[in-house]
Length: 218
Image (cartoon, rainbow, N blue to C red; front, side, top):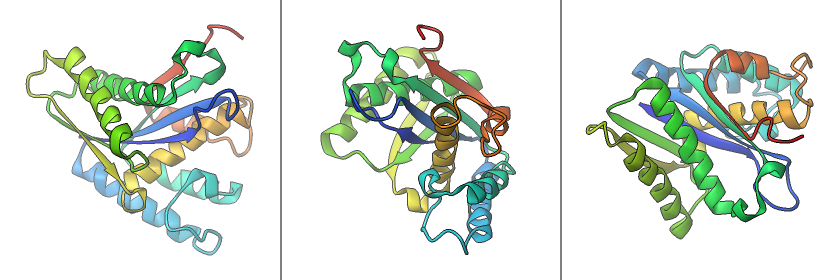
């Protein structure tokens, strides 16, 4: 089982974005994996004359390309997951950027494992943006939560891979999912009827949706 992750927004305080999102793609079968490559390739071919980048990235898509890309990616059989952080609701003492980043990723992976009841090998594949000590701390956060929560699954093994998103289609799809969720909250003010808001279509395929901290305060 592969869980691909990428993010949208930032964790900077006091400035930066109002929201931070992790998008996830859950690949359960070889057919799902093949679908990642197939539909990313198809999407890029359909926008080749308007899009001059090597990989699909939500931040580089204008609205017409975004519609084409999302519609193509939704044809796959893989599932989606996401976590949304409302940054202004995080207590000041918890606003350690790296610690918060690691915890959000670990929590999303944890909830996906619980939702699907995975009991064997899990690969977590994330864009290679962390190096050295930060990468080690990220890995340890995920692995420690695995030990604490899933020791009743003796055969469960979680492995973490930091990969170049240009060669990992699953990461590119995760980026589009994260960007779609982010835009729903940050750009369209949670208006699902907006012409270029594809959040409702993504939600139909989303198995795990985490919202920190919905309803805590306005």
